[in-house]
Image (cartoon, rainbow, N blue to C red):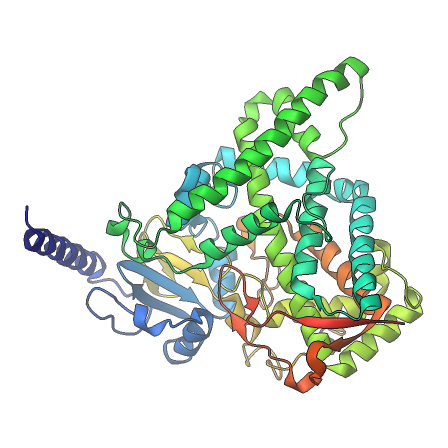
Length: 498
């Protein structure tokens, strides 16, 4: 078969798919949206900041908008009222996931609580996470571990302060989040600030986030699946494989130790012990060793980058707004005492600090489109048909900056939450950085403890100045789009001893 025949065959297949798609939506009242071009649809309108492009398009086409991205029908939700319709009133119809091609590496989508359909296995894994890791009692029991990790973060900053060096705030927070999780799950650090011994693991998690955040042609043109033209799935297979191998080794080590503990009647001590015991005691839940390894992969990938980028944005906004930092420091000095590390028990008495975290998550949601959803069949929403197999983006970034809901939406004003009942736990759709409904992020209870403690401790332990002598108003606040919304220029700031 010559090259021309292959090209003609490919063009015929593409044209046929396009025609079938057009026929499948004919006669249905789709949400409004831009007229798609042949083959590419509206992909050309996304640019490198899709959250901003889609927000701008929603000003023309409305809060429920339909685009074709390549061969994929995509519905975008851009208002709190429409998010409530989709994530609460019709949550079950919208509870499936669009599975990116990258997540087919090592069949991760078959084991992951993020990607599994809402069914018995998904419920078992959610239950295991909620009761064994994110329940109030489990979080209280592990509080001393988190406290120690925050103290180590402050010690690292103190060492930088003594040397007059700037701290890369996002990197330092990433390391703290990583070790916090590894101590909670495995009772050991997987990376430390002063050596390269575990740098590989830190880089692995970072690389997974980078690959997962890249736009992948396969996700828009599924017929390219076999070719994997950008090599994203191939690289993800390597990264996932290394992390799974590491967790497998740690679990084997623990199972061996567990045999000795049974002989000594020692109690289960950390999350991995509890999960392994639960899988033996409750075989009907169908959670085996493979599920536990993949659960760890989920937790490390989802729990590190989101926490560290939120902390970096919060510090950047504080340094850009000197009045904010002054108010936060005054509150911390009064409640905690100047120079002290913040304890989790202090957070309830630090309303302004909590408002700073809410305001950061409003204006910089860590995952701007949440995790995309999918409808299995046609669903009617507000008089429009969302066609079967459409992927659904909930634009949390647009909702948090909606001028109809928020006064001066682009200004960082924690005070807006002082007299407000708006919460971020999925009940108030004006602020949904963790999602809502049955698919809400299971790690929310840990995040709402961890971020304020880290932020409060950094602000209360040092004064800060921006690296390179730049002033607050010169601080670059540009975003870099990926699976999480990063600062385009990492925040570098010099801690000054009090």
